[in-house]
Image 1: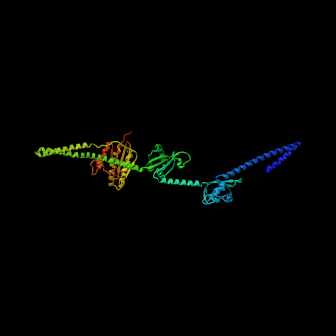
Image 2: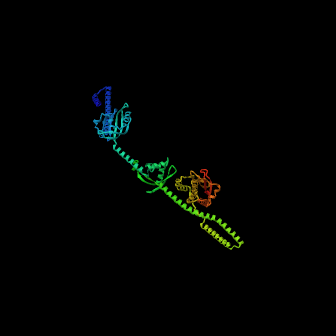
Image 3: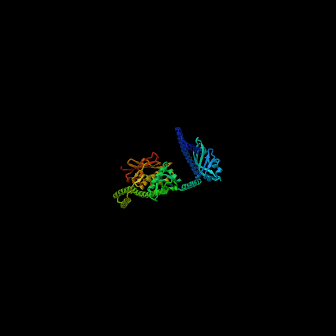
Length: 533
């Protein structure tokens, strides 16, 4: 206003000068200079007033924004004493302006706040601060708030005031806690379920899993997470809508688990994963490993029963053939003796002896004819054709002998060097190996303090080899071929080994016997020639 009054005075002087009509040149210049100075001063003053009005309007707008904002606003000085609050602050805290202005803002914070000192120290250094704090209302009610504090720096670089913006997030915090509790409850329920439950994104990221899933991933080893994700995505792509699928999952210890898999699409919103639209895969895996193995054991037992029946039939035929072979020789002797007795009878006159000899000769001849007929009816050993993989055979042996060896404290070991194809069907191969294993177990149990039998399958150049060795007493070289006679010994071992010889001959296989340098007993090698492909 003083400047405006001064301009008014200058205008009066200018008006007086206008009425002055000097004739001298210097006087005319003085009048013009005074006139220009007054105009320039008036223009600058007008511009200054406009700027002051704009600044005043901005301050008014800022005050109105602070006054009517929904967030509580509080302004303190550098000593943290409250200088100004807005109505939203009064509503939130229950304090009116006259009750709180001039007091320290520290009385707002609840004692449980451990970050107040750190906040004040940060603000004193001129740095902004943002975090959650508990506020004590005037009625002692506690609020959870989100506080943003901004220090105002004056011209000399020190803090002059601090502006606090406070937002009540109590209800949001309660809601978040409820959601957290619900998630914990849901996770507890999921962990109590024996089925494996996984929520998988189309990119393969697991957003939710239960304890059973974590156990499965751990069993799969270091790369279990990535391997399982890839496996599930591939299975989902192969499955049709509402279709189930049986999958096999390999473990780090070399074994596998079998699972019944179901999958369905669910919206991302079910798990609050982002705001974008999309879906997730809800995968459920039911462990059927036990059922699968039980069914496998039943199948192996059924095959073993079938093998037993086949073996019994084959042994019966081999027994018949062996019996005929052994009985034929004494019959030939009897026939020769009869001929000799006939010659002796011819030299004397003993009619009764001749009749008896003739009767004996007819009887022996008839017996020989009947035995020949029996041999023809029994026929040769019938052996089925086919193929069998070494993995299938060894798995069947492992299941079949596991319980037997456990009950009798026998160590039964299977070594599988490489996948091999044998030129006999599964039942025939199991008969072969079971004959050797049973004899090996019997020998090891009789002659070893720690009975030990092992079966080895390996692929050698141009032949597939299966070895059965034991920790028994072993065999002498003169017994190597004698043991294959059907009626050798008091047990059925000779019959079984003779049957083994018949089966190996059918496929042009070879049986080798040697001393086991590892276990100390006998080692039987079944060698099957393979054609070059």
